[in-house]
Length: 163
Image 1 (cartoon, one colour):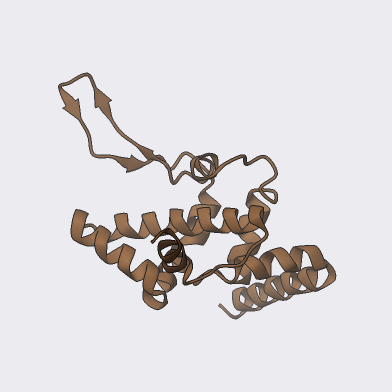
Image 2 (cartoon, rainbow, N blue to C red; image 1 turned 135 degrees about the vertical axis):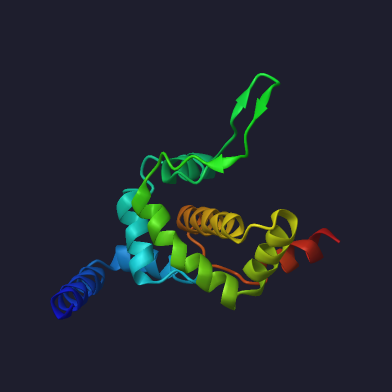
């Protein structure tokens, strides 16, 4: 156990050192870390697994790449299965997004409201968490592409502008 903890700390220190040496990468991870729940390790995993979003053209493609896209099982009119996530994508991204989704639901009001709404609609907590994971991943992509930071009051400011 001590060996594994030591190796984990060494890896985290190596990641921190790499970020200190690369200003551009540090800026991108800091931008992603403004999203509630996403820490340094999660931001690095997202950037590493997507190769800096190099081949990703839109959010739909990103969610498909991560395996968080919804697939429906249908066979004509006789068989209709429950919609599920495909899981045919990158397992590392899905794994990395689990704990950030829990943190986001606990500490951010926007995600807390979304989670409550989805749980009341479907009654399945994990389904709501997967939806939050997808939202966090899409948000990190949008922040990366637009070179902006997470704004907690964005939804409210858009609604007041439209009114």
